[in-house]
Length: 101
Image 1 (cartoon, rainbow, N blue to C red):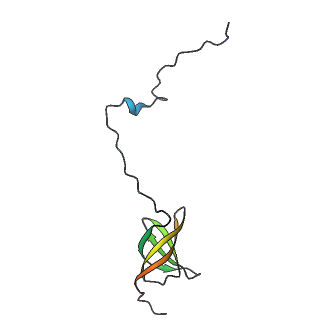
Image 2 (cartoon, rainbow, N blue to C red):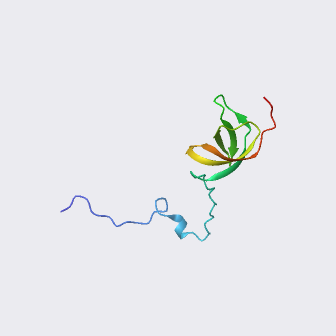
């Protein structure tokens, strides 16, 4: 004789999928699509770091653009995405910078 009896599974509201039995509809929040490698983005360079790379923002993420000048507006191709940082290279310069060095 078995020491432990096999119990029949009972429905438990804390472990079962309650939403499936709900009378209220699910509210689906649209996810913001991330930036993919190879995508072309249009950005304005707002700062330059000590290595001469341009820094911009795109959809709440920091974009680092190689060989970009301060104040210019460029189209850039995404090379690498790491966390909240996007690395890109210039494909086309739309407007040159207004800043004189």
